[in-house]
Image (cartoon, rainbow, N blue to C red; front, side, top):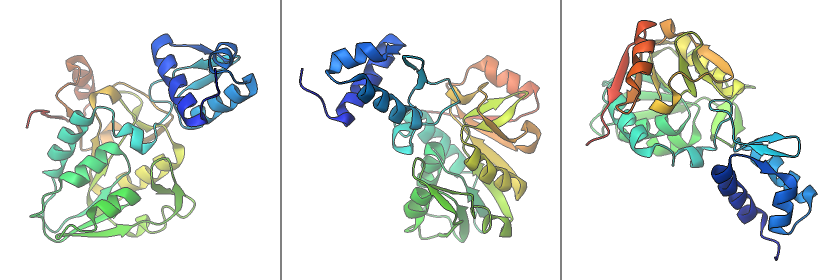
Length: 261
């Protein structure tokens, strides 16, 4: 068969991985009519994006919470749940407040849901897409933290990612996470972004974690807060009651947003 473009071939590799749960380089090379070297390059590129884990001679799906999806991809996952969480959390913002807004698909929905009636709210964010989303909001001023750009999330991180952030003290912080666990606390897949989240937690009077039900009882690479340092978790009404109960027993307040509008 004729060779496919790299973009289409990688798309089909992921589709096959979803169906079969494991892949072999030799099988893929024969299927797509390319060399094993080309397939290994495809798998390496997909691993850098967090889409799979390379193994000796093949690939497996990523471990939950260990890898992160690109922002454009994560925005398509649990969209209704993230929109519901965003609406709920947006209702916690009051006129005149200074708030930190973290990167991510759920915090993007939070920014999108901020009421046009809000007045004199200062948003400090390290998310370029959120800054652009809010630039036309009549009641919001935006400060972008600066730092080094991570294209995967449109985020600004160290080096220089905390310089501006450390000059602010916020009323509330709204943070994404890849995992929330009774013992491990609140964790993130990317260490550089976890450093930024940590500063937001320590420089805010209240810290709200915005995470859909798939993140509950998961543990990712880097902890940025204990449960005691978090004011509340805002999740969706699809959350497993046993997972919610475990987090509440550990002392975390859990707020559940309805997906029904």
